[in-house]
Length: 379
Image (cartoon, rainbow, N blue to C red; front, side):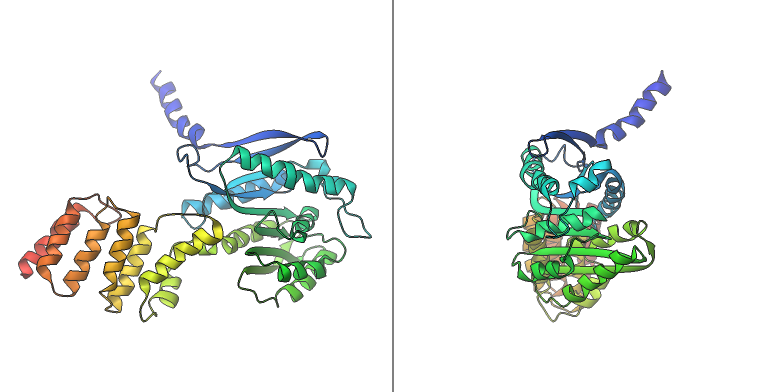
């Protein structure tokens, strides 16, 4: 009996945090049921107000698992945000779903119905059923990678970010896609990839597309192209997925050593402004409002101290008060500022105030006592 109880105890976390399921929606456009897989973030069940970006996968039958795995790994290290992942089951329907008129280069009757199914039925259904943030990504491979580009043809595209893996482009797309990327005045992310071992026609046309798109210089376009030297039409998917995700969510990442050394420590001033702008940009571009990470506070604190800009610690304290009002962080920053400026008596007072609040990161009550003792002896 004890062994059985232990089994269920060990199994429970797996059940609690496994939120991948299959669902079906009837399409009035296609006149049929369409199945899709959906994976909800681990925090979805207990964070009842948070909204999440969505990643819609064409060819969800085989792209779902590799994308989900990359996202889970990146989320574990807080390099990537939590994302709702939806994969459309296409199986043998991918060619009819994505059928294109060879003369016009546009979806034919069946392809147009599938196009409208996604934009007019599936996406509205998902937005109504789940807490989805305004930031939306679409991805595909081969024929579905080419098809997803049709959503760029609209003046107000349904999606903010496009991941096109070894795309089978319809007629004229190598010219039309750069044209649309140049014309659209909305923040857009565009990633596409091919490989040396890719199908020759796909490789050549994708490189041609890049030769024009790479010349576009627009602040609201985040563009990247990969041509993998040692990959094939299929293996490039595993090379490209992390590159695409880290490109799209590049500004979400915590402050890295490189960012600190190359962008922050070299500033003459404005360290706290840099931190505020970083998180404002995350909210503006990715529609994600998150508290400033503790380690990012410590990085800015280190830059301020390194450059003897102690007065900026007051602004850092104010920011800490907004993000972690119950923690000792805000008082600690003021204590550091006063200690560095030689006002030992007031510094000790703020460390004492910090002691009475909640611990955070490596800031502990034991540490505050040690700081107070050091300043007492120094006095």
